[in-house]
Length: 586
Image (cartoon, rainbow, N blue to C red; front, side, top):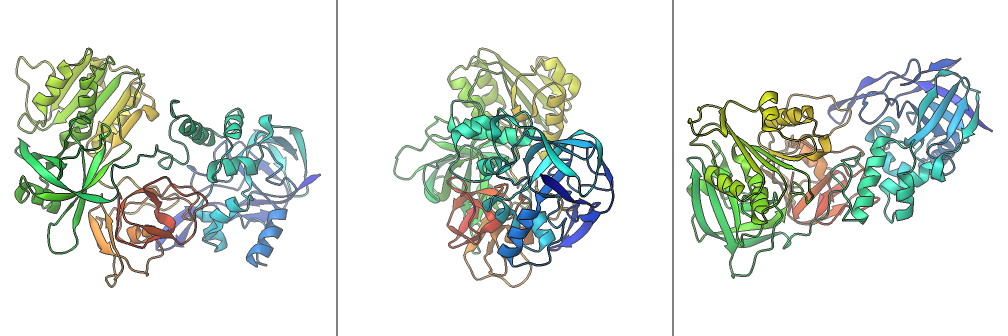
């Protein structure tokens, strides 16, 4: 008979960690006597980061005394007390390889249902002073698990734990954990996992993505807990950079030029996917080469690559392109990449942009027009005025080739002419989008300033579009994912403090930072943080793949071997260091 040995609670607190402040509830301590267990947690308990812990699906965390004994021996620790792993219930029995997702248990006056394994999270390692603990929990098949409260009631240490119902498919906690985080997955088990109603929605979404990746014709689900790390692999046309020739440079507006690129030997260019981007390396000055990324604005089948670049005030790369680049010059180009791409299907398509953000969605419009795609297509663009309206004629002509094309333009500082009924003054609003008749089942692609995409994404969701069908692209570094870290004022990316390194050059292409590697940094992630570059991570030990970053060129080594290697041409920055000059899409 399994037994509840200890009931542990703790309220969230701010904890200093690596120069940051983490708001966390991982510090739990035993309490005596009964406590009421309610729908969201135990009385007196709280979770600091509800995105990863807590809530109805993860109300109670369970860990086993058998695992305590295992870790005491494996880690050589004699200071582990109940609650050290952040668990609410320390139990005797209920091992991870026997408890199944969907199992129901009665403890005291409450009833519970097993919903998922523990989320891999750096905070358990922070609590224990073992930085690789998140990886160890998975690798040694001892994650622990979460419970949903079916019936609220009082529990206390010493209560017996009684199995009241067995979960369908009988997949254990350890089975489910391995399916998400370890390689060599069993396709049959993946499909069985999706038949367990009790499994938390986030893990179901991740498994749908994994099933879809094994069956490319199947539409994947929306991003799950490993969002970003399970995008389709896209083998580039060539490794690293290659020299390409500037065929011509064409002014588009007073501040935007298009650069047409071709091979130096006349060989055909690999066909890009509509919406992808190029990384370009420029000899801006005598210091380190400058690397920037620019979306392709040409048709995927054009036979040449076209990037369109706005001259940014004080922009080193854009200034070089506008003032010093000439036809016939050679520039280093990395092959097309990126997952902001037009998807196949039959649903209506909405292409929304502002300013130079038109570049990737124009490539999509080219692809749709080339095949006279029968899907309804909406082209919605915002510009300052007529003079700054990039690709106005080109987009208008492409829409004329579509059987069901719709165009609407917004000028923020100029009124339309009487004959221009497709142009409005102002910005998109809920009312104006409703008047366009955009259907709720559409796929939307947005590119422009972050605030623009946030506002338009919200308006489209209010129109009924599902969040997973609203795709966004931005030219700067992606918004950070730093679970539990207390937000601070954003700082412009900069060179790292301290002496200049003497190792291989590390270039963060989206952030415009190039700096020599120094062994003072434990990982590429650590270097990026020292430069105040927005980063994305969760476990920091190579398990969750949240930090997966496209590797444009170069080689790395893993200081902590990941449990599963990332896809081709990507790297886990949380546990890697450069062995050669590297360029990261970060």
